[in-house]
Length: 199
Image (cartoon, rainbow, N blue to C red; front, side, top):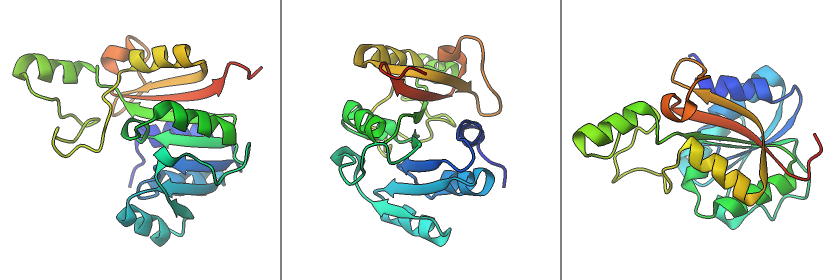
């Protein structure tokens, strides 16, 4: 089975042997990849019980918890990286979750679908209906997403909230996007730190 492009990109960001907390770990596919390819020490946090069973079947460590309740059980700087891949748009208090993530780690990898990608714009403009694409595969009535954000939205949010974007990767389903990412990229993967971070 070939890995998803966002998972491959995240695997290049995470250094070998890193301590990683994956928030909204789903079925554990990304954690498994990081463990196998990078030798990462991975732990997941997941709310969906069926997904937890899938993680356990892969031999992965996962905690049953709601991200909106924060990360009170984790000490400061207890991980090298926190990952919120395809889960940030599903939480209610984004600022709280990101600040808590940057408390337990100095680096947070955020991946999310870009609602402003060209084919989503075209579907909305031509049909007047909520877009369903490979990056946004759910109907409006069964989507787990609470937010529909764009790359420009998130970058502005980071400026307003004093989060520092250290690294940016913009992706289509098959390759990296280098020109007009808010229009051409279906997914963004960003590495965040804080303004206080000297690196």
